[in-house]
Image 1: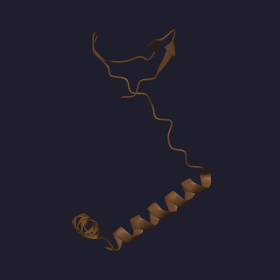
Image 2 (image 1 turned 180 degrees about the horizontal axis):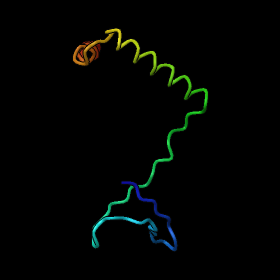
Image 3 (image 1 turned 120 degrees about the vertical axis):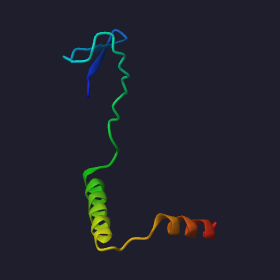
Image 4 (image 1 turned 180 degrees about the vertical axis):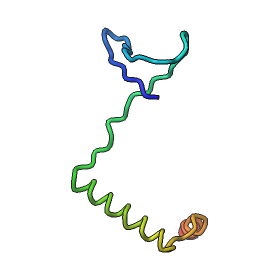
Length: 75
């Protein structure tokens, strides 16, 4: 469930209908505005993710334990 609130006079104001029982305590978390990627950077990220996904579908993967062991060996 997502609830939106605005800050008015230093208080959080939630004006959303809900089916939650009266007296329910709700924790609010500030929404992260996202990352600082521009469109070219975002396109490059998505291209790399797509290529990685396709490689994994072809079985071109290395177990995480092997990667960690290699990193430990190098340090």
